[in-house]
Image 1 (tube, helix red, strand yellow):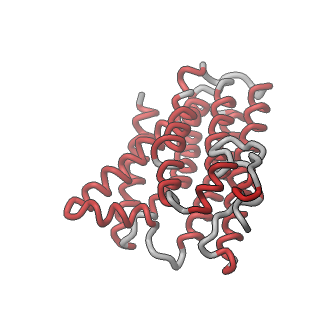
Image 2 (cartoon, rainbow, N blue to C red; image 1 turned 180 degrees about the vertical axis):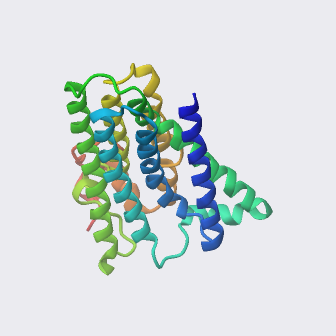
Image 3 (cartoon, rainbow, N blue to C red; image 1 turned 60 degrees about the vertical axis):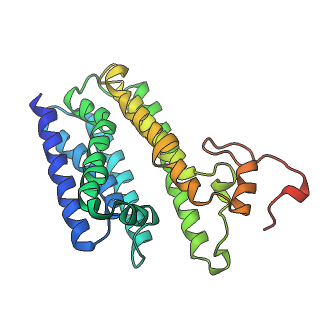
Length: 264
């Protein structure tokens, strides 16, 4: 039990440090940078705490590090030189006098708790090495690669689109975004299901399935897709885009009559 308690304590201190950073920077969107880096902290802390992590622990450490560093750098680059992310600005105004307390509890501590649950397969893999690498590991890596591709490429495509002045006020609808309205979210969910499958070589599924279920529920029903789509609610171009493009799973674009298609 000390193993999990120590990791939880490290994560608690980590999230408190980021709360201090948010006070210094006067912006709560630094929590988004902390997200990916937090998993890197947990994967290598659990690796070091375990005496026999083995090749599976090393494999997951590399995968999580690639994902976490890329995501943190992407968010840092996206936010650099800009005002605080609109979601946090809304909360800053809405929470009033309770802003600092609610920021601490609802952003940093809550994020730490969610991060801990999603990182369960990582911790289990490093604690219970299990057998050597097998078929499930290769299947999991393949699924992880698919997820990472959708997240990384989707983010890169959107970034290029936003940087083009001619696209100001327009909705991204090409590349991976022609098949799903949220390729980056689809990618993140998928890669965590890949990590879960890898973990099956170390532990029964009922210990680790909490991880992909948590991230799936968060993105599909809580803080991911619902919050982002609400931002564009009522936008005529987005409403047409919604009609012909899958919300999550990549699917062929639906065909509509010409006069109902968005003009680009």
